Amino acid sequence: DAGVIQSPRHEVTEMGQEVTLRCKPISGHDYLFWYRQTMMRGLELLIYFNNNVPIDDSGMPEDRFSAKMPNASFSTLKIQPSEPRDSAVYFCASSPDYDNEQFFGPGTRLTVL
Amino acid sequence: AQSVTQLGSHVSVSEGALVLLRCNYSSSVPPYLFWYVQYPNQGLQLLLKYTTGATLVKGINGFEAEFKKSETSFHLTKPSAHMSDAAEYFCAVSEGFQKLVFGTGTRLLVSP
Image 1: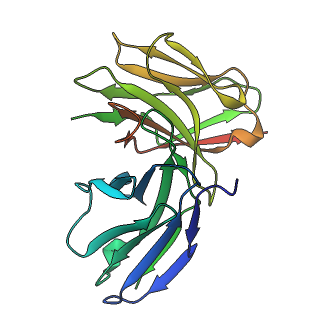
Image 2: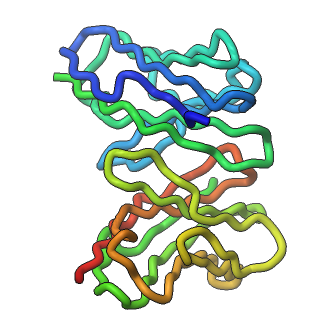
């Protein structure tokens, strides 16, 4: 199994631009999670999906952030417009079911200038 | 609300020495507790977890942790450090497997 796949691995953009991060979960996993990691705030859960349906988005920082999961094998996290304070490493993770561990992808390092 | 405190942002040990990484948690319900490891430029990998049952939990790479309810602790230990153990370690708490709350991490440095 290829594990959780994230793209791009690195993204550098300018303030005000739209950024789209992509995630392919492990096949057969019903849960998908988006996390953000920063030096100041550590690792934070932004949103998670079950069977493509958003279950809890209370961690999404503001309306500039949105996440979708159009099918079981693909999810996006979009920031529009981006700001320098959005610079962070964004991780996607997936889990096979409710009572199982989360498997993390390698992350996308986002830099907003 | 649940929270995790990891004492020490950096811990340095010599190769072969005992590794002890501290984690204290706060939870109003019986917690699920986890230790994850993050190697440079990689995602997090589960080391071990406690859900119910035996309070001493063994994980991968020779690590273990003990759940102590009276001390609200879940410290991670390894009897003998290897150079390959150098990484960042995260403790996490949750009510189940889903909404994990992570600590700020402890970077383990291993010297020859």
